[in-house]
Image (cartoon, rainbow, N blue to C red; front, side, top):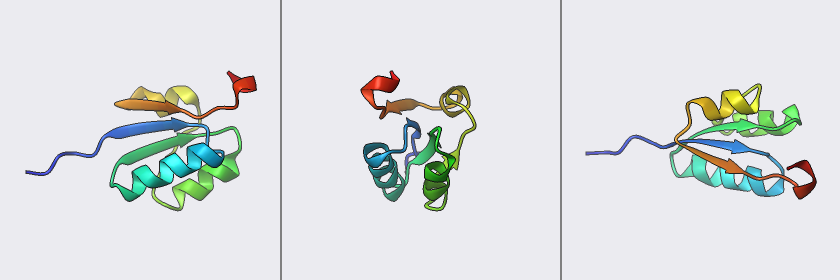
Length: 74
């Protein structure tokens, strides 16, 4: 019996957030990403992540939320 992948939102796709999202994708998890820099989101979408237009959209249907933000942005 296989377990359904977790639905994980990653907010912030900088160096740390993109690394976390990439590893989660490699592990077969369902990842949705939001970042103000749409190019960073597009790069992760190319690896299989879903992109979200807002934080609310990213987190709405997620089981887990990972914040990877610069402390100045919190």
